[in-house]
Amino acid sequence: MTPNRSIALFVVSAVAITAPLFGEGGNKKLVHITSSQTVPFQPGGTIHVDRSFGEVWVEGWDRPEVELTVTKSPDEPYGAKEQDRAGKAAENVKVTAERKSDSELEISTAVSHFSRWTHPFGPLGGIMMVYRIRVPRNSKLVIHHESGEVLVSGIAADIEATASAGDIVLLLPETEKYAIDAKNKFGSLTCDLEGDFRHTLMGNEYALTAPAPAHRIYVRMERGGIVIKGSPAAAQPPVSGGLQ
Image (cartoon, rainbow, N blue to C red; front, side, top):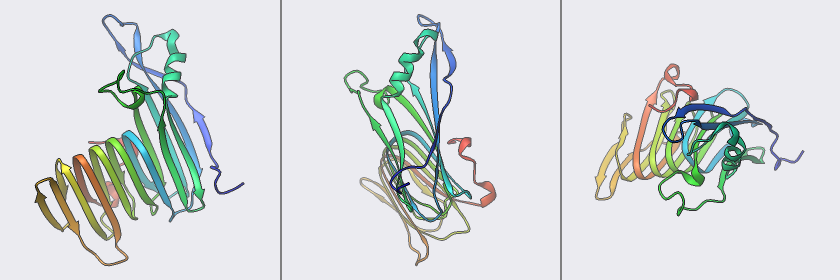
C-alpha cells in the first residue's frame, strides 16, 4: 500500500437525536452524526489540520496512531421521518484524513453546497462541527482554523495554530521548554510562562525566547482570545473534557 493512501478504519455511528424543540416544530429534534477514523502514524511526524471550523480538541497520547472523531450537527431540527435529509445536510461538510508520507498526515475540511445568502450568520454549510483528535504526543501540529475554539493539550513538540475568530487554548507540559511567538489583533492574550508582553494599537503580542531544542510555539488570532498555560502531566485533561 502506498504511503499516500490512508490506512484507516471508518465507522459511522447511528444518528443520535437529542434536545427536543418545542413550539411550532415541537416534534422535531436536533441531530448529531458522528464518525470515527483511526490512522496508523508513527511519533515524530507532522499533522496538519486545515480549514476546520467549530470546536477542535487535540490531545497527545502514547499510541502510534491518530484517532479522529468528528460530530456534525445540522443547525435545524428534523423529525423522525427526516433522517435522510439530516444525513444529506451533514454531507455538505466532508472531513478527510490522508497520509501524505510516513511522517506527514493531513486532516482537511471541505464545504460544498453552501451560500451565505441562506445562512448569513450561521455555521459553515449549515453544520456545527466538533473535532476530537488524538495524536502521538511528540507530533508537530500545524492547525489552520477558520472560526471557533481550538484546545491543544499534552503535545511535546512544535505547534503552529492560527484562526480568524474564536479562542485558542494551549496547555503545554511543564516538563518541556518553549520558544513562543503569539499575536492577536482583537481580544485578550494571556500566558502564565515567563516572557515579554506588549500591547499594540492592533492587539497584543507575547514572546518567549529559548535556544534549541526548545519547542517552537507560533500562534496567530484575528478576532479572539489566546491562552497559553503550563500544565503538569497529571493535570492534562482528556480531549472529551471540552473547553472550559
